[in-house]
Length: 96
Image 1 (cartoon, rainbow, N blue to C red):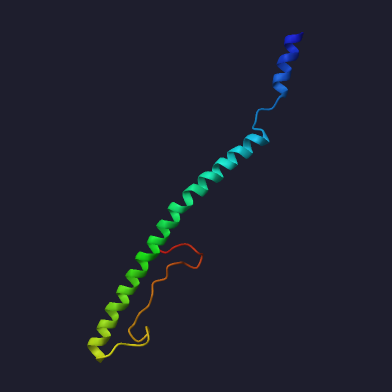
Image 2 (cartoon, rainbow, N blue to C red):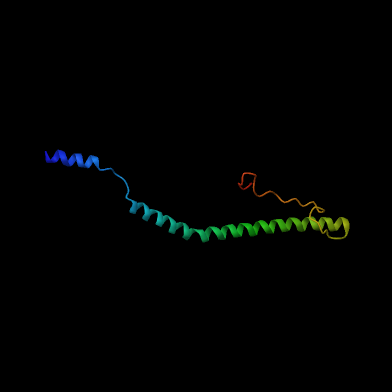
């Protein structure tokens, strides 16, 4: 009879994680995210730096072509035909 009661106790107890275990897991994940952020921000910064250099190079080439035609540099980016590429689409994702 006692064994039957013990097996019923085991079946009634639900398996799962306690609130403490979940909080510890969330804290560990948070610490890992905080440790990884500086690495990602430096990558983003370098990417923006490279992108800016490419845009400036494009403007330089257009200005030189404008100089060849007009013997002066332009004061307006529209005059040289500069149209920057859209970097973000309407829905907010990066364009490729």
